[in-house]
Length: 136
Image (cartoon, rainbow, N blue to C red; front, side, top):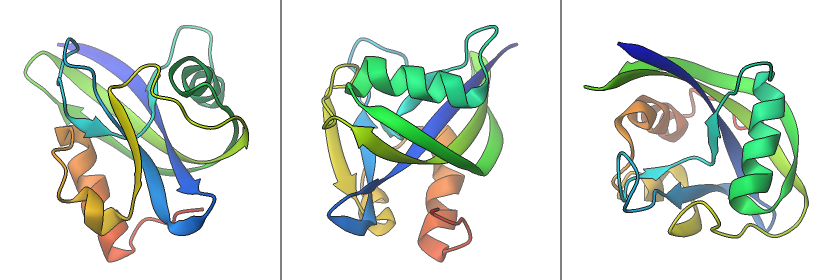
């Protein structure tokens, strides 16, 4: 089975530190219409941090200060295995735009539980709600 390395950003709402940015996948992509944290695939030759910064420029039109790694997991879908790394991140330039998603919103972890999320993110949501994962 194919394995891909994916990086994601936990981006605080600058107006409310209890809320974080999530995005809804496009309807023509795998795992269509599901919600996830912003980010994407790591390309050959990139560090995780470089990939996350690039993906957020491409998909959100924002520049990030990528902080520390907060959480990691591996998840097997029917068609591939995702190795997911979550990083703390702060927007240093720009306002998020849904360039690579159909919708963006800032939510608390409890509010996120009401959204249909990608399976790989579900353990993270549980840990965010319980406080087991640091947010910075």
